[in-house]
Image 1 (tube, rainbow, N blue to C red):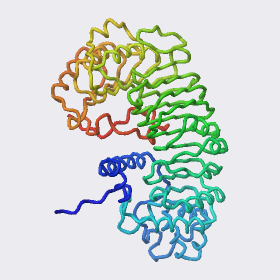
Image 2 (image 1 turned 90 degrees about the horizontal axis):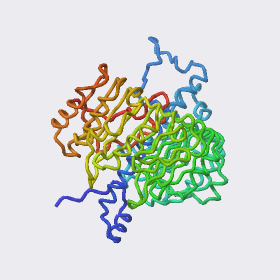
Image 3 (image 1 turned 45 degrees about the horizontal axis):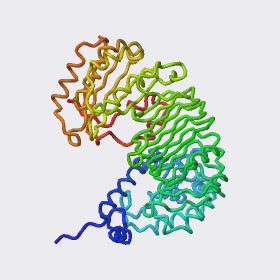
Image 4 (image 1 turned 60 degrees about the vertical axis):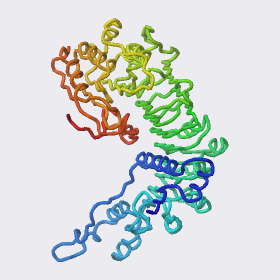
Length: 519
């Protein structure tokens, strides 16, 4: 009998505890591993060179050491871009390098301190003690400041004294970019309040912690913080509001995996991008955010199938990209609750939104009935992206006749130039929408139809492809380029890529697809 493979995340004690509670430890291990994979994929990049070694690249034909003769500032810049082990080793190159490491802002990523032969991510059997000891030694030895510190490999519950000391050093010596991820379990490990006294932070990402009480958050001060990420962090209503209020230059707010029921009341003079993924959302209110350009809500869930998420847009004059909005969510624009058939007025429209993404269950009549009203609320729309979502209990498909009776929609007729439909399977509701859209959109330049992955969603691909082709025969736009492609990704697409969504050089954050395979 073959020996059972060890758990990847759970240690034996946690696995035994799960079994005593009647849970399957292997299923729990898979969930924890998936959670960590989401967190690691959501973390920001660090500014290090990880390419090939230079060897003697800096030496001329006479083997002279030309790199060491570079100006000191250039050599410091080289050291600052090396993994911490390599940066420290430069001290043995020559007398010119000896003091550079200690005078250079440190980049410390504990994944680079894993034992030889240990791949990332570490498993439960990885011995964290050497990593923790190395981190402590480096932080004590280096005078600071620290330009970037990513600590993502340790089970912090086992090293609370060391963590407390690290945070003291960060506050005393100055850290700009800080990522702290606690490898589970427990999932509710209290985050030391010291982290909220590090006033030099420009970026902060926290993963798998429980935020401290209100008093600690009220005492927070982040005068330079521009980016905040909270990944599977347990928090109380109002906690995020406190953090935003104490971050006067915050531009990017990312939240992943809030399972308690997220309530946000956004008041900020600086926020430009808010992204929330894989979370239970109850109430998202944009009260006053004059600089907000992107509001991206991806993979939201209802607690126990209860009340729908309420999304209220108050004062957000620069909101440009908005999604992934669901027809069954309660959308309130200023003081108007948007309902099917409501007449669009100047107070119930968002004229700043040029890019809209919707998640629609075409097999649910109420979802489809809401679509014409939603589209009329965004009269200046240039790009429309729709994610088709499967439903467990279809209530009937609405055909092209429904759209004819709904009357013309001005932005579809004369403004929208790009339209995409993802997770398409050829169901009647999808085809009816495509027929209406193609026959109405006079200025459409690009139409992208992405079928679902048949591995996860069984359907007849050839039949769906033929239906989409027929729906585009009588297009109002004769110059439209049509692209029919097939998805190779998971059902519903990948988890939201925070890096893409907050990259303002990418004009359309919803038009970045996973790897696609052409028919």
